[in-house]
Image (tube, rainbow, N blue to C red; front, side, top):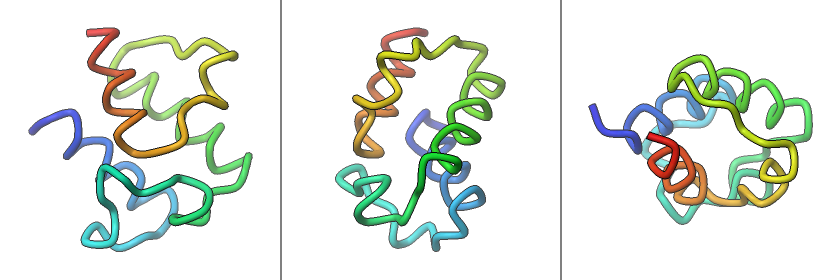
Length: 76
């Protein structure tokens, strides 16, 4: 499973969004309806799943699904 597929699955569960509506260009807040609490829980899940630590200043910079995937891949 690719990073994108894992992230997509996690976002789908977290935001209760259908996977077929989630694309790399999907914006977490505007398109998928995430709020700050959703984002924080999602970040914690990503940290656990990928064994990474997301810096606080990066959290607000992760706007799209692709931003999240690229950030995770840069930490691998």
